[in-house]
Length: 258
Ligand code: G
Ligand code: G
Ligand code: NA
Ligand code: MN
Image (cartoon, rainbow, N blue to C red; front, side, top):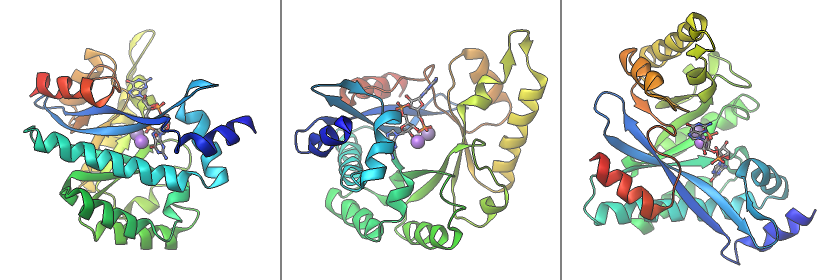
């Protein structure tokens, strides 16, 4: 209850900020983009994890204004990187299920693109699979309208929760983000984990046969990076390639990797 009250004032008090985590091309090690990750510093509660506060904002509906702020801020930052002379940086923004049900979502994305002048091809919206199958007709309608703006869509945390392969073919996703648990399962205490590797290979092949870009999440070791690269993974994301950090720090990372 206390968190609800604090969250209601957080936007007006300027307590939200974004961290950015790089996505790196496996074959070349080059950064191709960043994922924006929301952070909340509350005066009373300190830094609160989005895993804790996002569910509360979904419950209250606050996720709608907060989500609009995230999208706006992230697109502005991407445009700023571009204007500072960096190679075009894709920006990935997480959408919560509740935002997908917001009738003004598509109009808002369109107007953010217009206001910031960001090339739609540089914007990726990340959606977890949870709600998608609950209302397939609505999901299809909204995702298709978003695609119509020229942006791309990523299926986030793929392989966890409600995984169903049938809807992969029905929804217009461009990018598949393999959940970090699969990256972790590539090895275990005994070393190579044949079962974990077989599953990761199957996910990589699935993305390939559906013409989707495959991103491996949660890459923490050089061994994981090398295995994923050898086995045809397109993009890598994780602490090994870069931790989520503020825009200034990420600018250094982007420069160092260029
Ligand atoms: O950054 P971190 O690992 O703490 O994020 C925890 C969870 O919060 C992840 O599932 C992530 O997708 C989610 N998350 C982070 N930023 C946003 C955001 O801006 N919007 C939504 N809806 N979820 C976010
Ligand atoms: O659900 P989503 O995939 O958006 O969650 C992203 C979350 O994963 C963020 O909270 C981010 O901080 C976290 N994260 C990013 N890279 C790594 C990693 O290499 N290892 C672990 N354990 N978490 C990571
Ligand atoms: Na995400
Ligand atoms: Mn993700």
